[in-house]
Image (cartoon, rainbow, N blue to C red):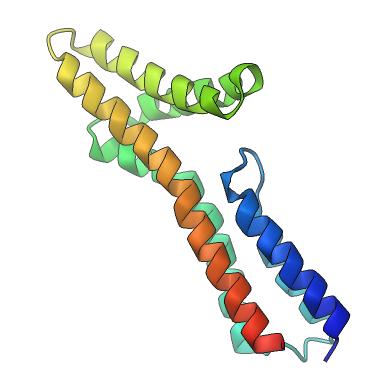
Length: 160
């Protein structure tokens, strides 16, 4: 057992879990690379092939969940895909101006304004679409953090 390497890998997995809430950090991909990197240092003897594949799959699924949850929740709220995509782009651009709150303002504001533009008689529908998109985007970070925390725990149990 390569204890210093295991401790470093566990520490990195904890960092990647915490970074789930930071925009533009591919936490799931970094967690997958950490697990594979540790396995490489042990000659793929630890954590075992089945566990390794499961950890990598969950880590990459966490990244996919973060990317797709805003779109899915926006669609559930009734917003068109183009509107949610435009809101996501606006949110990303506003991150550089307003910080993390800029993402929420850009996404929610764009979806709301597009909803109003599409049907000015239904401001409640536009608000609903906006709220669904924002909740989905915020929930994605929480979902990713939970998934990556489980990766860290399972990894620690399998190598220590």
